[in-house]
Image 1 (cartoon, rainbow, N blue to C red):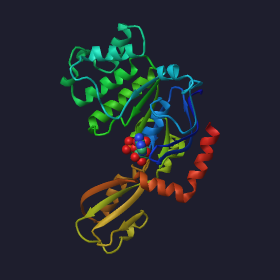
Image 2: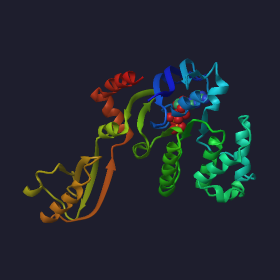
Image 3: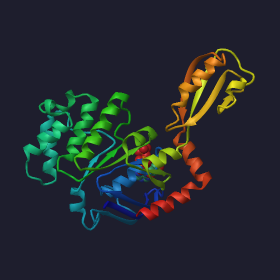
Image 4: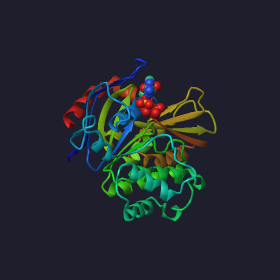
Length: 320
Ligand SMILES: Nc1ncnc2c1ncn2[C@@H]1O[C@H](COP(=O)(O)OP(=O)(O)OP(=O)(O)O)[C@@H](O)[C@H]1O
């Protein structure tokens, strides 16, 4: 598959002296959903702001569709739609007017057929004559996406599309993004939710402290993300594991009130009901359960320690 964006040796030092990006190499494939996953301050917004021409790089090169983002700014910017992290749009305008206006900013002729399709695709057509301030938070986000797509870009950047959004809206957003990808748009989103990267992306890049640690196909990365821990809160303290439970990867907490069970974050969930049955048969009573997924920090630490980061960078190099 062709690269629609090619980033090489990209570095950014802000005037404050802070180095936000260290020599990033990255290729985005046409038609994919790519998630840039990293904690706050990792450099995600800086990276996409450079690609979109909002922040200037200190060193390195970015090609969008084969064109340099600096010497060919006008064309490369036209190829891109950006939904920034902060939602800001004119509260008193109607949905239709604000989206038409955004298209005009790119010097594109009015195209009511395209705008209608776009608003229908984003389930906004019924609200086309509503003022922005009358819309729910989720709909305002959709309007931001419609604005970003109003000039028919081939690439859409979504900076933290679901930050502060409730679970239901998040799932709506995921469906919408997949649908947009099916219409041929290449999508790059930033997130600090592992779950979001897992749910949405074809490939994931993990970034921390301005370094792209690895770029992987989603499945391969999620396998690396290791384990989930299920904690079983017991009715009574347990001093030792009953014989029948010795084959399970179980650890009794120090106060003997909890049992921790570690299982594969992907594909291992089927073992949880079996464990519950085994606990029942062994006469171990419990009153509550909780699960915990490895945090990004756990993963970064794990990657750095296992040396996978270096291997992964090689993989990324080979990808380019
Ligand atoms: N204009 C600026 N001047 C100085 N430092 C900046 C500037 N913009 C960002 N930074 C710093 O660069 C680093 C990377 O910031 P960036 O916004 O790219 O991270 P991020 O991964 O998008 O984080 P978040 O998820 O919090 O937005 C941070 O330490 C941030 O404080």
